[in-house]
Image (tube, rainbow, N blue to C red; front, top):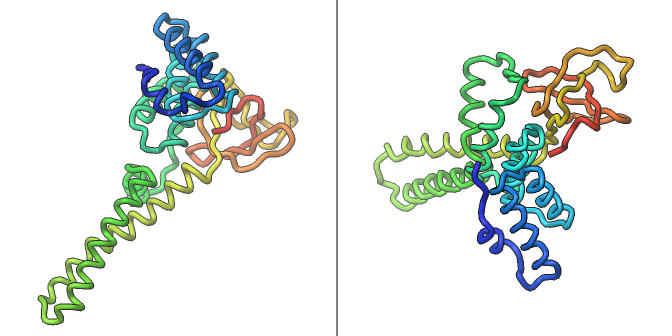
Length: 250
């Protein structure tokens, strides 16, 4: 997995700001450690930048690469998800996230929702929310242009009305897809299991029955919390409680 360079990093900070020189040095050390195969040290360098309140998608992307090379799958997936949370269109982070997911022991398949809903899930997940909003604006302007033209040229061909069908469908589809992406990417709380394994129980405590065992790298929605546990929902719809200390919140 390829790191992004110091030159890109320098474009993201103000070289005259307080501590900028130190941040550059830490970034340089991280890149050097990564190139030498000292992946744990490289990850520590990137975490130090996070502690200094420096946060951007490229930092999380490089951090994910370092964690993955170090064999810490949960932290790697968390890092790539954080990069995509800040920049949903970050193609390299998305590609590395999908690659890392292949090493997850828990390949949780979504529940059977039906053919049409499966198609909807696929189509509404192709672009980021910004991508669907761009598509929405494009289709909206085409629709508006056709309507304005018909209003000005009353005797224009009636078949122009049929041309409205496609952009209107695109407007409806792109707007609903954008709402879904915004809800899942920005409004929904997600978590990643960072331990090698953790029990998922019927209630928030060790006294409750175990219903499943999750393994490092498992991703899930966080629905709520109580005391030391999170209420989570897996991709297949299974809900249960898991120890907070085993979870990294995205």
